[in-house]
Amino acid sequence: MNRNVSAFLSRHNFVQHIDLNSFADALLCDMNNGINGRKSDEDMIRTWATPPAKSVCGKKVIVIDAGGTNFRSCLVTFDENGTPSISNLEKTSMPGIEKELSFKEFFDQFAENLEHLKNQADSIGFCFSYPTEITKDGDGILLGFSKEVKAPEVVGKPVGKSLCDALEAHGWNRPKSIAILNDTVAALLAGAASKKPGVKYSSYIGFILGTGMNAAYIQPAVKELKDFEKPQIVVCESGKFCGVIQSDFDKDVDSKTTRPGTFLMEKGCSGAYLGSVSYSALQTAAKEGYLSEKVAQRILALSALTLIEADSFLHSPYDSSTTLGSILAESGTADDYDFVFGLLDAIVERSARYAAVILTSCVIQSGAGKSPSEPVCILCNGSTYHKTYKVFERVKGYLEQLLTQQRGLYWEIVAVENDITLGAAIGGLIER
Image (tube, rainbow, N blue to C red; front, side, top):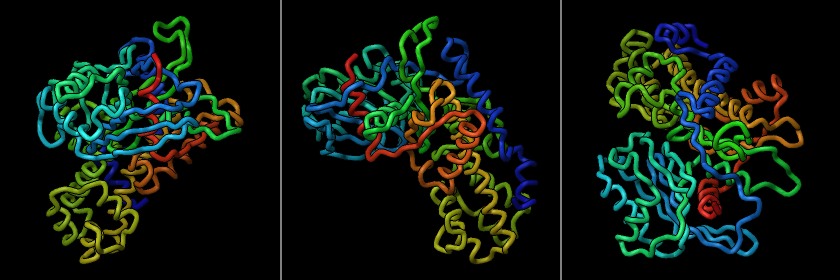
């Protein structure tokens, strides 16, 4: 790496190439504290569910995917052979993103978004990608919003019941069942449902690295531990882990969020914040003289920088049509190109390391993956994971090192079309 980049990052407490094993140990300690009822950053949420033993056949279910910036809804139909089909798909913005909403306003907007699916099924699979305590009947009590959603009156309320009340008020027949599940659980269930003939997995993990960051795994039974007499899916809420070293750029971004001092892992690595961290770092570098004068002036004139803009530069640094590429093409030196590229690459490389540590911890915690013929199935979802510069390649490389080479544990990353929708549909039909 460019020496100036290394010096700059070190000066601002940005740790390059964090020690992955030490970080995994810290995360595992926090996970075990949460599982055992001790204080932990991660919520380690029980779901009271495991993947169904048989394929879903001959049923319909309304699916809602509410998380990040988008609100998606559709009808999923499983034919007699268990083959799913998706219809009536609509996408709009997530309520509470643009402005703060009251409890009633929040769920009324949900009901309005679902009008095109009115009474088309009596079961709902509701993928609600925020920290939520799942109850034994499949409902969920919201613990708090992330991703800058603003609807504080909803916190502490039963999400499923509240939505059913709103739908009934809007003229619906009251749904017979509704299941609240996290997007990581939906990813896990989709991986389990899409296993190819002749393949056997020892366990399953769902991982999201998109607008937010989170993971779910199957906790094996621990007879001595309350609530874990049987195996069940656990949602970690990995983004809430705070045992991370914050750089000056991270602290700057954190101070401007709705809830400073929380979700530090997520704020350092997920799509909702990577652009802001990159912007803070570039602005600081420009002020401190690490860039040539003309480039620094143009950087300082930027009002913001998105992850898409930063990622576009990393993929094509000499493309003058991108935000940063146009600045550098006009007046940048070779050193400017190297510095900007090295700085942004360090920020997204850290995201890959955090992702690998989370997955490593989940595989270890599952107690599975000990046989190469029965690996742990990992379904990864999210645009930051799949699209951001070299993230998924680096994650795979770190997992090979951390799990297979160092611990003799085996894993396989899979992809499933419409994974969250399929998993949410299956979750909505799990009998409890």
